[in-house]
Length: 622
Ligand SMILES: Nc1ncnc2c1ncn2[C@@H]1O[C@H](COP(=O)(O)OP(=O)(O)OP(=O)(O)O)[C@@H](O)[C@H]1O
Image 1: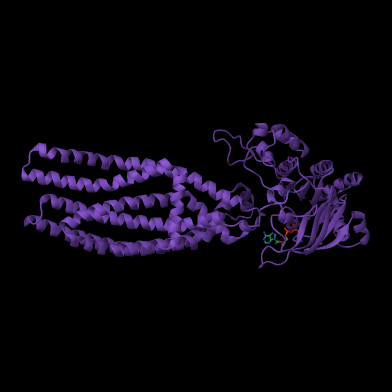
Image 2: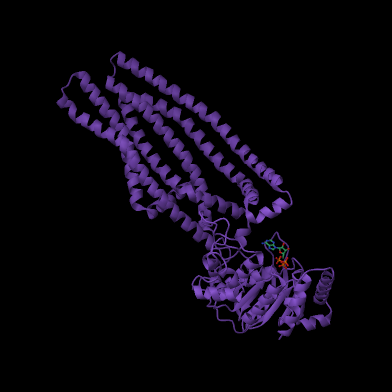
């Protein structure tokens, strides 16, 4: 056995001890007793039978008979007690293991690990392994211990009767052990190989069942296509599993035949020995029990070892996740992040998602002054969202640096930094939780009054108040009460306002990042949100991304990103005067809106949204 596997057993044993010492000790002690009980039963049976055949009186038999009764009782009761102790251990282990796994996952301050397919597969296997590998390991090791005790007892018994039989049985067992180990290794390999297919299967299955996807799936008639794609994955998985099962059937069948032949040969030898008077009737019973016991114990050892081996390989994924270094270097002695007073500076920032990816930001120099609003605009894929993710230190720049009042973001604790940032990302989350919880996730320490206040600011209070259970309404069609239809779903714009309320809830924030905060809103709502935002932004520093240029025209600084570079910067008027990319986009949008308007777009159409928003934005301009 290789050392890493031993190390994993040690880790699993330490986990079992930490999880529930009493259950771990009880399971071990009961395991030892369960191992001894069959051997004791066989020997006591022999003593009683031989005494009866010799004609000893009951008085002489009584102690062995009593012992036999106790051993019989133990054989029946011990497994139940052991099962209970193991179940207790299993439950406690599961809590501990999940706790450690998700602590480890949370230790990654950035996003890169979650976007790496290899790590994703390891994480998935680690998650699966966390559910059962540690208890399979611990319980397998205990079962092996128990089987070894039984084996040793019966081997000693066989040695007393015919030492040659031990050698024969051991020789028959060795190939079985090899086969089982080979199969377990093969199973672990197949598991690793089929993980991507399993991920795709879950993905297609999800698409077929998720309410968010149901609309498009029906509209585009994708049901059969997705079902076929999912079944293709299932068939691939089945094919890989079937290959291993066939191999198992062939080799395990051959080994079972070998074992039976050895047992039958031994039995014929014992009966012949008893008939010729070489061994006693009691010896025959011990022999029969020993042959069956040794084979059962050896099979148990090999099977459990195969399972332990497989669990050890799976457990390796868990240990890999738990031991993984944070995806971003976290300083040992972080610099305390000061409240923002001067501004945030990007100095020659270059970024790509990995060495294999193209450059997304190419030498960005930008100063975001304290208390001002900076708008980032540009075509799809220009790098706007990437830039704000760097501001939150979801990634570190590949080259260059970002400073907060002169302090490099790499030198501060990421949690401190994020505590000072409120953000609505383009792909904000809808949580299947109550309305209040959906907002409270923005600041877990906030009370109900603050939650209401944030909802009011985001213009979603009235919507929530009108829900069946107000703020306590479950915003999910999936996880409502089963007996009631209390779960509800919101519209896209209402969800977006909830996300905004979540960002508003953070009281201490110095930097407000809004990546397309009103993309899902109607014209009136967008106008309200932007008016509210301007009031709320107040003295706060904010970075605003929007494709609706009318909503950013009053920003103190508008920055046009193009292919990862800053192509233009200035106020709206300056940029319009310079007649560059911004002016082109702005004019194009306005013209598009005019066309849309004359084409008969209703009050909620895009034309109206820009026209409604623009004048009010202008009137509130700085
Ligand atoms: N996690 C990621 N891994 C690899 N590439 C990514 C990742 N996220 C974004 N990109 C790539 O980076 C580029 C810039 O994306 P980004 O989201 O920053 O653009 P954007 O300007 O915000 O675009 P949009 O206006 O469409 O939101 C795109 O080409 C995109 O494919």
